[in-house]
Image 1: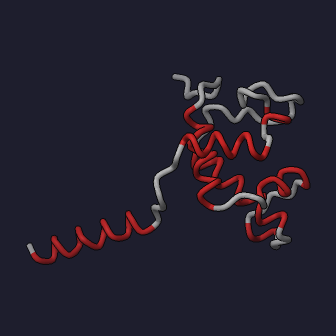
Image 2: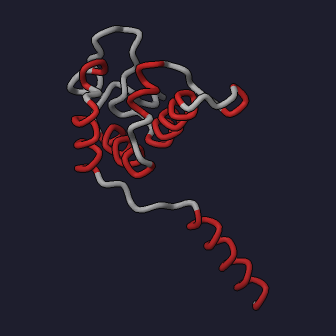
Length: 120
């Protein structure tokens, strides 16, 4: 029983170690507006000005966090082996964001209605 309790405590510690503050949807919308993401991705995050630009509304938050961090690494000149995305425009925007900004805007975008869905 003691070993089980220790294992459970260890698992909980590991599971919560990577969690940061909870995402703030209002702050995420503020980041969206401050950085002017709508200028390319559309005010609703699904009506991009160019069809090559991705729909962001309804996208998985963890994917958006990963992508924005990859743009930050690309803008910082990280080597290709560091999982980077190199795009001058997105890199410039992403490099302005803090870790909490990224989590907030990703959560806000994920909460928006959009055409992205798992179809059965």
